[in-house]
Image 1 (cartoon, rainbow, N blue to C red):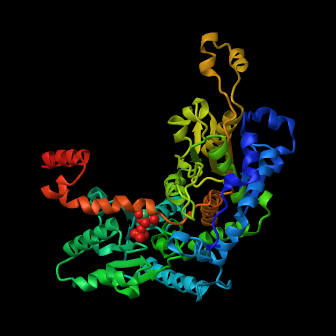
Image 2 (image 1 turned 180 degrees about the vertical axis):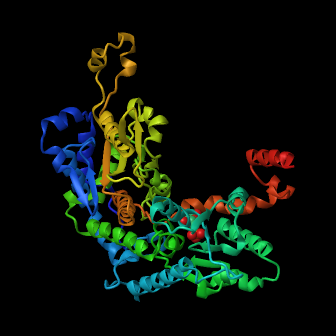
Image 3 (image 1 turned 60 degrees about the horizontal axis):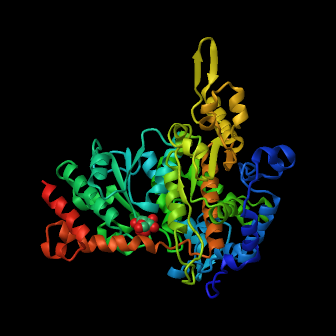
Length: 556
Ligand SMILES: O=P(O)(O)OC[C@H]1O[C@](O)(CO)[C@@H](O)[C@@H]1O
């Protein structure tokens, strides 16, 4: 796989056919759903516990069949199989891409570059579970003998976003008396705020960094170490204190040792796990401690369910394949640039932020994996907020603006908190209000409101245009019984594989992230200028000199 170049998707017959279909495409969702009684059942798919309704997307049988043909012509299935088999599909880093191995059951078998990956994964998982149990039970204590009450994960990007998102999402599964905080930003406010009010005797720090070379994480880890040693009761031995209060998760265990953390208290993973695909590796240690090994195992099982679906479901029933292809249709043929993700679940409030890294660090690429420039758009901008908050903020643009914004709506049949609003002799289940909004929004977006319908409500003629809704705004609805660990695993894996499908069609390496390097290098080079080195400042461009000058004048 790594030896042969990607197919240029624009050279395929399917691409040309999609371009013809898209020319003047004017599907009317009202008519489409009304005229074809089979459309909704045919476009309602299931994957694990997820119930996925694609029917309110802007496509028809012809587009659908051609998208599936495109997947065939560019070889999505072959690339998927190469990923699952451990081939080095991360070409620019010459690495396998095997986050799917992190959730294989213990009796599965997979050899990666001569190593038994399943045995390795389960060895680390077993150690992480045992460690988590010791913390949860109070057997693992701080240096003064007190049990741990707060776990602070220090990490950034993939070493932060997944654990935070899942910690928030699975709040009902957390153990009482144990909480987590997450320090990520190099802005000292982050560490300053998160350390405030902490009791050093009952705090455990997890330094999470795949490379153990990330400026933000190492700086924050040093700040936390200094804070710990300064605030522990006098007489605590520094080496014991670090040993009891610091553990690490990394692929670079030598650097962990250099930092002063006992490698007995370090949990490894492998270069075949990308940072943004690592929340189900030991990077999830804070989550394992918070929700416990059993729930974490359920989460992994959920991931695996979706992996198996993606690997084995026939194309027409394959949810990640179908959703990924629809995203290609919107991006490359209907002119969409962004994609909204709108969870009608407050507990998923960090899910869009998590998806930003997953999707944009993966597919924000301008060259294919053979180095050739792409001649087409890649990488949608993913964004979102929980409903119904978003309704009162940006839905106006989605409903009536000039841009096409495909949106994924996510909701659960059962609420995390069942609350009833008793008023005026009526009892209203508040979750019903949430779901009524969920259903109503996708209905309004799809079917709109015609000028005649607006007039029929007695609206003055001059206000009719402003109060008309064009409709035909595409949405996918994803529902599940409840937001359990297993369902969360399925959801995350679904988006991992959607991202994969898009990257495979575009022929890009969705697993490297060279685009984040230049800024890091320049920050290192610039730093002396920020500290007042006039020579280095004078070597900068005029705009940067002016900005640094402003900073120097106003810093005190
Ligand atoms: O886990 P690490 O090595 O500290 O990296 C953190 C993040 O930094 C990045 O490399 C981007 O700078 C991400 O891909 C990664 O998730």
